[in-house]
Image (tube, rainbow, N blue to C red; front, side, top):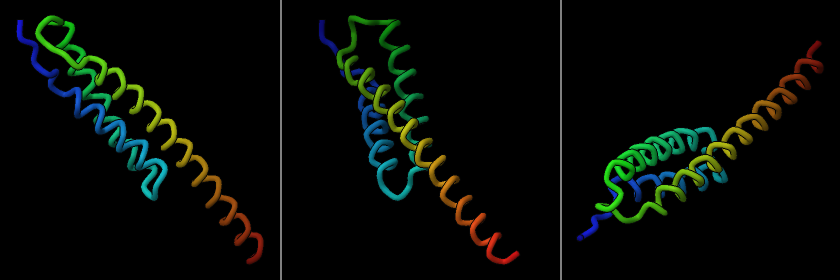
Length: 99
């Protein structure tokens, strides 16, 4: 039996990697978008694999992509929370100075 690469597995892996890189660089909150896309592709690929497990190879990429997408989402949310706290402290400081 000739196995085909699992459609969407490489996309899930790529989006997971981009979400982690995006979380560590300047666009942390935008990494959530890539995480959601990666999770969507991973779910679609897993559903396809569960229907016909013998026809496809590359299920490891789906699992890895899902894990990386979750990690990227958590890092982006941490970045977002720290950004809100940082700008809240700055706003509180300037509000105190002008009163």
